[in-house]
Length: 115
Length: 404
Figure 1 (tube, chains in turn brown, yellow):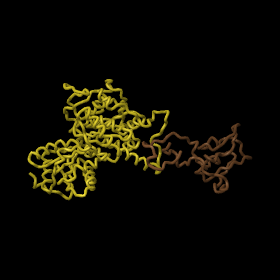
Figure 2: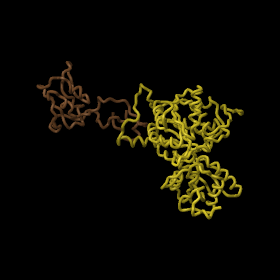
Figure 3: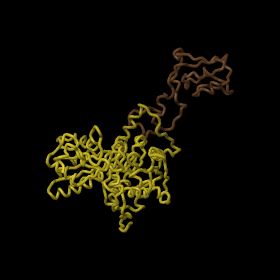
Figure 4: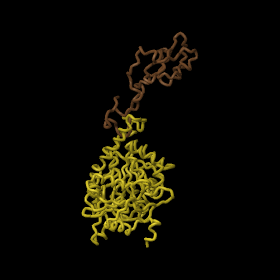
């Protein structure tokens, strides 16, 4: 999907073509990042259940396997619901040396009226 | 009923504007009609409901609880891919207002019988154009008809015009409440088969029911694309006259009747013109004939399309005239009345300044007499122009002693 330039590129009738949220990098919104202390985690999956996106990764045995930063927008619900306080929230700026580049669709472009 | 038949199964029958509209609907056999009857357009949904109940049409008739719901159901059905029609008047039209720009933006080609009645208060069921004029910026095409025959023919044209891929814009087919909607006059109807062939089937643009090519209508769109979508609507309007003129020729071939965007009556060699809309043009044309017999070169321009406004055609018709009077059947309180505003704006491009007098007449159904039209022509001929709008049929206290 690409952004239209001229008005002629935008289809009439307010039409938006089919798309998927799997391509939308809501992680670009994040200012706070959850970090899991694996020594404390009991894999109860309350964070997986409560996450409003699909940012909690699980392995083949349905055990907690980390945070998907492509989707995680840093809301902190996971840290709040964790019964053993295994998840803590940190300023995104603390991870400036780690990769967080755009490689999906910007959330501001959702519903783009282009095919 | 019918006695005379000719080609295309044409037959003549006494009908009112409303009955003519309803008969066109029966012949068009739309997929969906959602309506909430209101005076003076009541006959249209009532008559059509009868056709549905008696199996004369295959349409889905949706009886709703308000005009807002009626037009909302129409928009949903239209973007689903259906051919959709409805009708309303006055306060019913006002209640629909929220949905009109949505229908236009969705490019939903709804054909709408708008039977002009003044918007309250005070409550009044008679004709003026204060219900349709506030919708002039809603993005719909507006066609104003002079008589029942024109209503019938315009419905057939409107279906093809609205659904044309270059246009894709809903259409109001307007007629004057009671004056046109309830007076019976001879109307030439086409045969059912001829109408069916003329309107064809709707070939919808991205219908919601095409599940193999899924789309959404009306998704949230902020500053990124809203402007673009409005510009696209304007382009649809820009195509109206070229598409319409071709359709009009097709109808002419079938019926011998044609309706240009501006109906010019003895206007070419006229010195003085009255510009007016809808049924009042009949009175003006009569007076034009009488004045011509007396040697006054009077003429009439009846503006049939208000949206899009036929600016170039109007300028060509007015160029070189000695004087023009514009008669509005609605007011823009605190500003210039709608028709006068369009006409004056169009004439700005002329090198010469044409003397022009604005009039407001017929509000709330006040009668418009031949004498009124004659007075307007006489004022033009006597070079009698005022600095502000004049009112026809309204007694002013200051003028009381001057009247007899």
